[in-house]
Length: 135
Image (cartoon, rainbow, N blue to C red; front, side, top):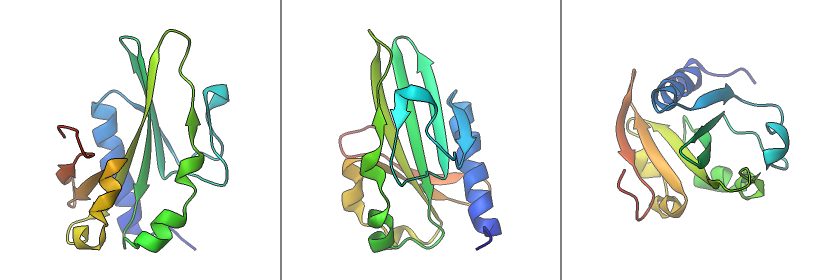
């Protein structure tokens, strides 16, 4: 099935935002990057990595043009494993991006692990952080 122009646009918007945050971003990686990260039966729409001040961060992005929580939960997100270098702290950040007008289809219970970004035609309109975050 061919990728829609909306989906391509969403990936471009999120990629630009992550690059502003100094992430190196890969689109739809075919396999995990090196020995520091792994996953099974999963491929994010975007994968980002940054390292600064003793902290390494991996970001996984899912762009859902028509959010369906049953389909979203069936993806193998929990298989992601990340090991930072010795003496560094590491974390995995998760972002679910949806188009304007589709936030109502998202289960806000996802916020325990996922940021939710509502995208306009050229930029994010709203960034809803994880529970307990300041985003």
